[in-house]
Length: 98
Image 1 (tube, rainbow, N blue to C red):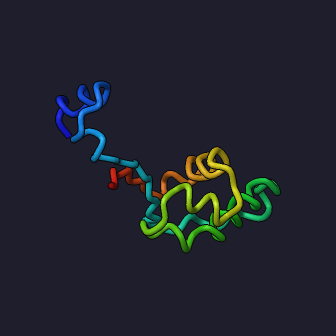
Image 2 (image 1 turned 90 degrees about the vertical axis):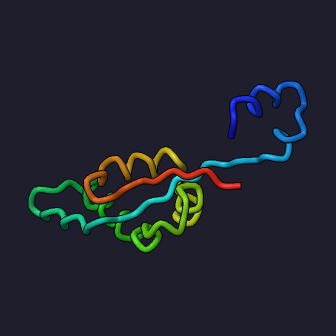
């Protein structure tokens, strides 16, 4: 999208009104995280790992963050925190879609 269309959006440019973009972030799991050791892990760590395993089928790049949060009955902040913990095993890709 050109800078011209961005500037025209303020003045009611027809081309700018016809162009509607949304940004979605998709998640890809590139490798499996290890199972936390029972002896050294806290209940919070085990719950977080179980939540990751529950949501894992949606980490193949076909579901965006809002959809994953809705399906998992999470708020977006909780999903973001979960993905930060497992950032070594996931890749997030943001794309613009019409």
